[in-house]
Image (cartoon, rainbow, N blue to C red; front, side):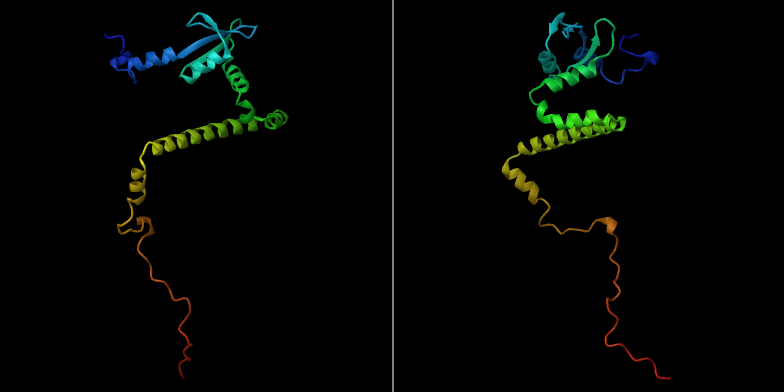
Amino acid sequence: MQSHLRRGGRRPPWPVTVRRAAQELTMLIKKYSNRRLYDTKESRYITHEELADKIKKGASPKVVDAKTGEDLTQSTLAHIILESRKAGRLLPIPLLLQMIRMDDPMLTEFMGTTLSWALQVFTQARQSVRSLAALSPFQLMQMNLSGYGQPQQPPQYWGQPQPQAPMYPAYPPQAPPYV
């Protein structure tokens, strides 16, 4: 039996090469008490800047305490973000102070959800702008004019137009029948 087949003879849900590539991108970093980071794959100490560069290239690090094995990934990544030159604009001091003062679990959940959503929207918008920037001005003009010149049909959800009742009754009012 082939080694890449799972129990039951089924193939894995993704190609083996993709799984291997994902394993290669995941890196184990040990953090020592002196705040130094040790890359176990390359067998050398690395700086926070080097770790940030590897993350930008697609690596997914797992940072653990060298003595206890405790997962320190989140705090290390937050440290890298806050040490970057752009952190002052991303998280200004008044915002950080307010977050510390509130210390509310609901705020934590709200901030996490909101930031994730905002980053997703930003990424999609940036991709849209990049795809439009690749088009020539003539292609953009053709896209804008593509719907014109053809008769427009109302959407189907509008249904058929209904006759309207007159806004005002017949004027002048008719006299009541003579009895």
